[in-house]
Image (cartoon, rainbow over the protein chains, first blue to last red):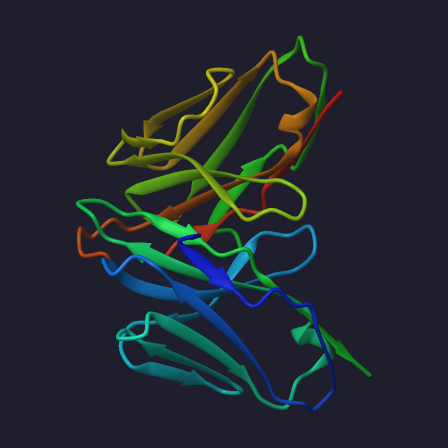
Length: 111
Length: 115
């Protein structure tokens, strides 16, 4: 089983839609969690950190369920500019940093 | 954004060439990373440096050689590469707080093509 798994996608949604991505992780030593977005041929950029039970930033809401080892990202009122690949990242703390990236979920927001 | 810079942005090299990738971070961080991203694959961690000491090497071939002269600079020396090494090479940095709550920030990457 891969350490971090994500919805395979791609997700094609109309502007204004609400879309949710799921991510599961296998290592219970995971300490912190992140969502990054990556545009085509660009570097990953931090979208949100998820440290406790979840947090919200404008149209974006991240949820964490430690018992189920599950993280989600909800995007409300999708914009064309939200089109990107969304990467789930888990920091597994084991006497050192170990950032593990999921394979990403591709989102296309259509006009 | 200029927190983490990488040069060159694009590199084409032959299999017998020797080249180096450079990364510089201006965030005051003490940990730096090299990742490889091949087409349609997840990011693969190559090397981690914390306080200028290498702490992880994920079985990367010896044709890749990292160097971290100080906490702000990281190099990846390349020699006798193979065409399958063509990829986007990303540098990242974080503040290693020994608490497992750090956040990584990425440079723009070097797109490498090996002919």
